Amino acid sequence: MEFRRSELGRFPLWHSNQGWRARIAVIYPGGGYHHIADFHKLAPKGVALGAAAVPRHKDDSVEAMLGLDEKVVETAKMLAASHPDVIGWFCTAGSFLKGQGRNAQLVAEMEQATGIPCTTTSTAIVAAFRQLGIKKLSMCTPYPLPVNDIEKNFLESNGINVVKCDGMDIVDNNVITHLSPTVLYRMARAVDAPEADGIFISCTGLDALDVIDALEQDLGKPVVTSNQASFWMAFRMAGVGEATPGYGRLMTLPYTKRVF
Image 1 (tube, one colour):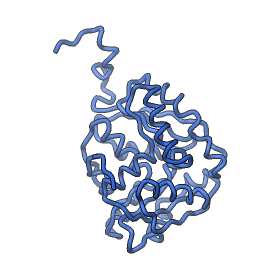
Image 2 (image 1 turned 30 degrees about the vertical axis):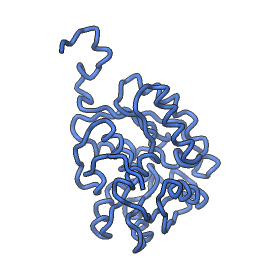
Image 3 (image 1 turned 120 degrees about the vertical axis):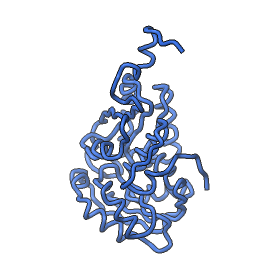
Image 4 (image 1 turned 90 degrees about the vertical axis):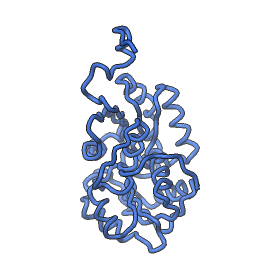
């Protein structure tokens, strides 16, 4: 195969040391920072990140968060100019609040606008539960209780039985982003139920990544967080199969489409 100079624009990875293995583009709610910090913990060598924020929501009420996805397609088109392999909308509530139909529609709109494979956090968490064989779930969140109810309905519409759900009922997103990993560890342990196949810590704005391994060892079941699942799916969609040990069973698994 001959490499012609005229083709370099079509294949930008030929002349870049950044992302020689894969490029992941992330769209996230403004004001968050755990999305980027978690990438640097999880990414294998040779995987690069591009990121852009959509306007920050006023608070974590249902009404405020319903508008989170309004600029996602526009932002995806901007990120597409850097030729990523995958584009992800990394926001849990921003992808489940309007239901599974809207989540699937948003992925389709992003892909149509960019010509690049796309995903969302809600798409990723459902895929993660299926990959891990989790059919009965205990879930903890920082959200207001009405948001929890909507998320529970979203998961159950995807075949996941939420056997126990508890939230911190926090509306201020500044508080959510500053919750310590120790608080999240205790919250996850408190929500565990004997009949649950796994634990889910919901919200990409949480600093939850570093408690996954300890929770799995202490509870003896898989633990999924929003950012962990989002990056797992993005890496696998980009063709990066390398395991990232220390951050839960999920990060050691491939991605295959599974249904219950």
